[in-house]
Length: 122
Image (cartoon, rainbow, N blue to C red; front, side, top):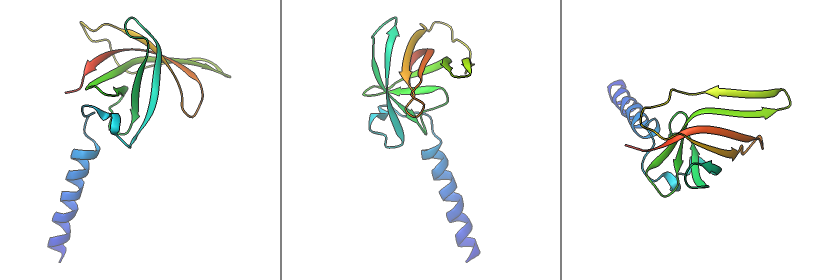
């Protein structure tokens, strides 16, 4: 009986890794695991985007609804009652146009300013 339980548990862990911990998949607009946000005031380029943030999207990334693109955040800043804050998530990638966008935090209500780039998921 123990020999049957171990392979089943191992298979469950593997499937969890493959489906739960995978990078963002194309067109995650239908993902029930994410929170929909509106990126606004984006410059240069299109002014607004609908994005999904959440589990499986990738560190520092927001999946653009209806596309296979991701907005990869490099720096994020905000101001609250304790002052100005800035966090850096990664380094700039060569040949990527940096785009500044804002979004309102769904729980905090704060206006977050983000600098990042758009890239296809793949």
